[in-house]
Image 1 (cartoon, one colour):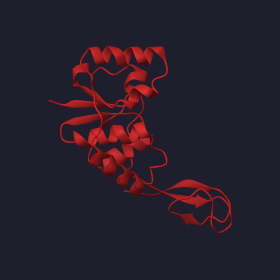
Image 2 (cartoon, rainbow, N blue to C red):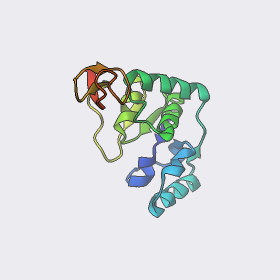
Image 3 (cartoon, helix red, strand yellow):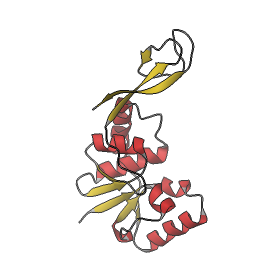
Length: 160
C-alpha cells in the first residue's frame, strides 16, 4: 500500500485528494501552518488517521549530506529536512507530496518519488554554485566574494 509523506503544502493548499489514513508527516509541519483553514485541515487529517512522526536521526544526516552536495541546503528549512528524512525512511513505499522545488530536487536525487500539490514537478535535477555579481568568479558556497567583496548569487552549476 502506498503511503504519502505530507509537506505543509498539503494542508495549506487543501486540494490533496489522498485518504488521511495514508498520510504521514512530521511534527514541525504543524508549526508552519498559520491560517485557520490550514490548521483545520491538519486537525481533520489527524482525526482521519494522519500519522505524525519524528524522523530518524540517521535519515536527517543523510538528507543534510545530499542537500550539501546539491547546494540546496541554504533553501531548506528544518521542516523541509525533516519531511525529506521521513520520506527517505519510506522511500520504497511512499510518495512525497510537496510543491517546494528545493525539496523536490533533493528528494528525486535520493530516489524518493515526488508528487506536487499545486505547482508543476521539477523537470531538471540541479547542482547549484555561487557566482560573484562583481568579478563573475564562481564558488561552491558563501555570501561574499573573497576576491572582490561583492555579493554572491546562486547559479545553476549543472544539470544532473
